[in-house]
Length: 135
Image (cartoon, rainbow, N blue to C red; front, side):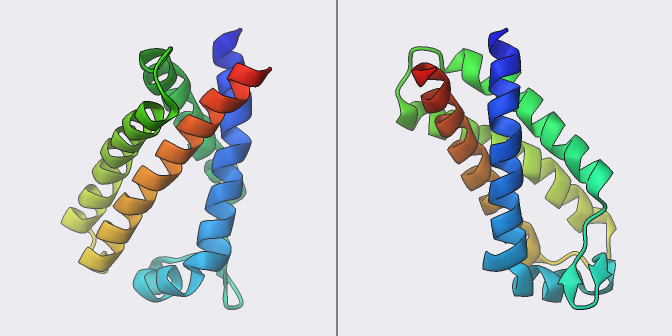
């Protein structure tokens, strides 16, 4: 039951954080860096929603089964750090694979996205831990 609680809390957090990051904070950067690789509707990024939902499911599963059990009883700072390490691994595999095989994938995009992976996974891990400790 606790895993389901972790997943149900972390999934919307991932979606909200990513929506703000990709839709507002770094929208111009991603549109420029991705160029013709990006799905668009007019000038806006337009992700394919079903696979995006599956991404959040997988990320929530990772946090629920790998990060939070390891961090049980540890501080929020430690939970953030372990979540950030998880994000570095997760986003690092994705970004470095893309950089190695896609001509248009750039170093600035790779670095920015890997840093974002650390921030989002660390933040969602810590917030999920905090929220579940209160309910």
